Image (tube, rainbow, N blue to C red; front, side, top):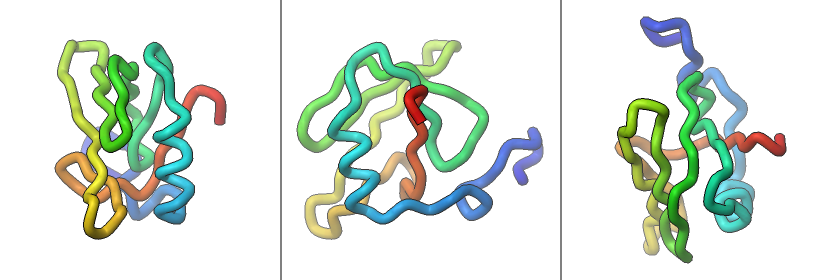
Length: 87
């Protein structure tokens, strides 16, 4: 766990890259997501084929982007789990 008590990516269930891509491609503006099992949630504010832009309650934005060579998704770390309000 991290200092604030939230789980780290290694403590949450890792998903296959294809499943992460499928989840991210189905997101719509206004949906809420969690990344890598962390407690902080983000609201999706924009999506396109290779990225998702989301914002937390304090107005901090993140961009989750796909590495076109590896097919993986990253923020400032490798994305190993995406959870939506639907999950």
